[in-house]
Amino acid sequence: MSNDAERIAKTIEHTVLKPETTPDQIDRLCEEAIEFAFHGVCVNPVHVARAAGRLSRVDSTDRRIPVVVAPVGFPLGANLSSTKADEARRAMGDGATEVDMVAAIGALVAGDVDAVRRDVEAVARVVHDQGGLVKVILETAVLTDGQIEIGCLACANGGADFVKTSTGFHPAGGASVERVRLLSRFAFNRGVGVKAAGGIRDRATVEVMIAAGASRIGTSSGVAIMRGFESSTG
Image (spheres, helix red, strand yellow):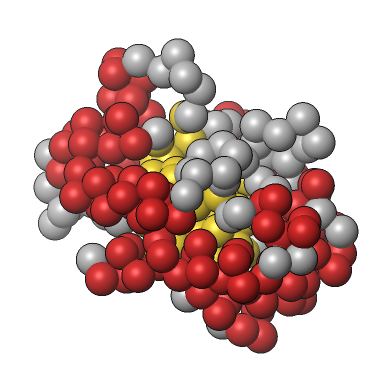
């Protein structure tokens, strides 16, 4: 694997979140994550224990073991904060090491920044207590620039480790270069990273998102992206 391919692979969270996902597909996702040395796999909570068990079979002295990422409050973010915290606690107990929570989008649009902060804080407290990371999905395609700015502030103050563009399920769209740049501008100085997700399907788009400030990429097209490196090198 080339240096460029390794660099990209380390940013990818290999994702399958469709409701019809089968256990066999989870196993395949994990095998692909190991093969290509992806950062991790992102699976719905019902599959976390299976993914964690599958990945734990890898001899860590030979290969880096991908992490397991679980979505919380997905995909609407409209659960009670206590429910999101309970989801996070269960996911961590099942073997997740990172949680992607959907923010209280309605509260953010309404300008209730404190409610957004408290929502993030409720989940971050649980995840950090168990040594994990929290990424907060802001569904940026439905937000104004100003709402993205205050959303980043609320996330940082609530203890988020990353902010993330989108769930990939909203009809308004997924990640865009402009939104990733905004997240990077508002989050970077607060020590918060950026994850781009939603509609990222090829190497060129990954490169553009990284150049715009993303250090994590959520995609269900990880294998195709890596195959693009193989074809470009013959």
